[in-house]
Amino acid sequence: MTSDIRLMPVTSSQNEQAGFGKMIVQEIWGDTNAQQGCESLLQLLEGYLDHCDQEQRFASRHTTILGETFDLDLIRTIRVVKGRPEVLKSALSAELGQDAHAVSLDIAIRLMFSTFVRLADTRIISGTIFQPRWRDSESLVSFLTRVYPQTQSLAAYAQDNGRVQIAKFSTSYLSRFANVSIEWTHNLSDHLMLLRGLNWKTLYLFRHPAFLKVSLDTLARDRMDTTHSLPEALRLGCLPPKLLRETLMTYNLLFPELGDEESRAMLIADCSKKGLDPFFLMLDEHHYNEHETPTDALDPTDVRGLYDKYPYWGYRLYELWKEADDPTPSTRIERWTESRRNPRFTYWCTVVSLSIAIMFGVAATILGALQFWTSYCAWRGCGAVSLGS
View 1: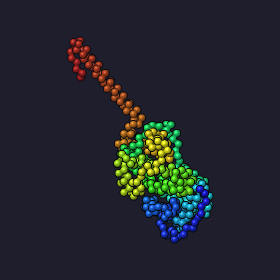
View 2: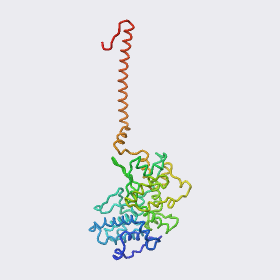
View 3: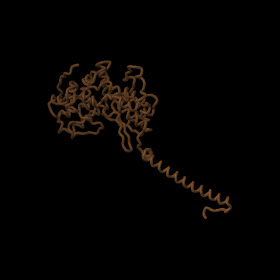
View 4: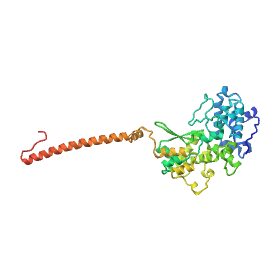
């Protein structure tokens, strides 16, 4: 697939005829009018479209930095990025012609791949957890490889290759036994991030599974086996297929389709209250999971298997597993109980216990000696001797 791209002119009338989010969808995945079920596609991506509008409003508050033609520049930037994913960011900025496009490049990545990028202008910030910066010396391929590494499990399971109970990944178990609450994020780069505070624990989950599905469908239309390399996927405006499928698979760990009605009820409630993608309720692991060997159909039973089945998210899943298996105390009672497990506390408990035992031992010895003296005096005929005399 060639890296050349034709920069077609973008007119302001085109911007007026379609919403900003719909324009972004068209530029990333192609002409939506040419796709089957255009209206259903846009309805499926309703949550993602709202996110695009929020990003656009966020950027529009900084018109003195970005300029009045930011929307049109962003569309042109997306076309350039798709055509040249292996070109350094500095070269892309030079091709776009203005230093201000460094900002539009960063925002383009945030929209195209739902991946947070810290903006080049430090005056523009927004809340997120993982805040990577796309360096001028990096290509898009290098940047996304750094943000979504395929973790090598050797170091982890060399120290801990213990058993893993998949049931403990469910949100019902995490909520009931580990006091973990769920927060939904627009950034795929924050997916499965677990944050802990003094009296709270929050697990962040990506809230746009429809975005992942549409990306996979786009790759499947290009090549049925979806064996695209990272550069090939980026030229189609998509993340690598293995990352997309693996992310969808993690939802079934957290909200099992079978055997955990409580977790599914929590998901349904969040879909209703927090406006999540309706695609959450249509997730079916068999539609996006691929099995090359019989063992691929089985859930991992140890740490090694966890990393092997989830190379992208294995490290975060392993951290979540450790929290589920041995929860960090978050309530006063839990912290009090945890503090009593401290070796220093155990040492002093032992010292106090031994001291008390010695005191009772000395008292018992003295009492025994007095009783012996009393008995001896009675035997010698000295008469009864009271302990008080």
